[in-house]
Image (cartoon, rainbow, N blue to C red; front, side, top):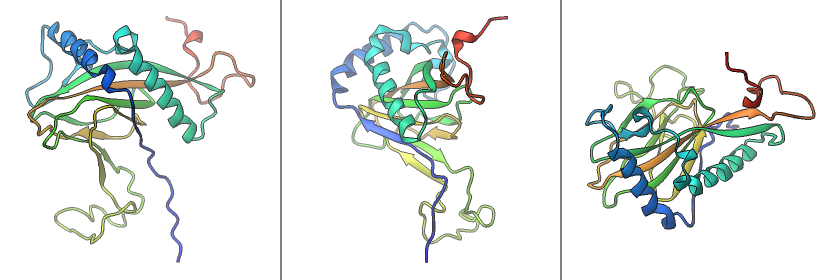
Length: 230
């Protein structure tokens, strides 16, 4: 018997060796930025996210240059693994923002439709309890033979594996970077630690290079150098 498994979802992660050297300085800057926000736009059940508080350009802040360099390196590794021709594309950091999850706070299910790649980096993670996880949802369900087979009303599966999974959780770890397709639905489960979970997200965009030997590839976004504001 043979079963071929096709169309996997590629989630990249790596633990950055010298992350501890930058932890405290980034935490200080994140909380300093948060302290300057006048109007809170998230409720008490939701993590505080910088992007909805006009703090979404950390990649332009010198205090986060180390992390932005790491994001570039690991995003490039991810794209190479997917088989992309790096001679035809450029990668841009479009947005980047801090997230602070106090005890009991979470992030609801969403995608990042404005980007191609999404990155999360864990600056600080509580200890001694479940500090929450990034949860990815299997929306395609290629092998689901009948709808909602895994629901509590049916419970038709006796073994959950890569052929029938509904979701997968990636637990946070200090100094870990995670990269995934921005279109992938995901949420972040509640932080059950007394200590806050602090992370930074980046939205990355892939475009064609300004000049290529073969012209601009048809289905790549043209380089911003070629745009004209109307």
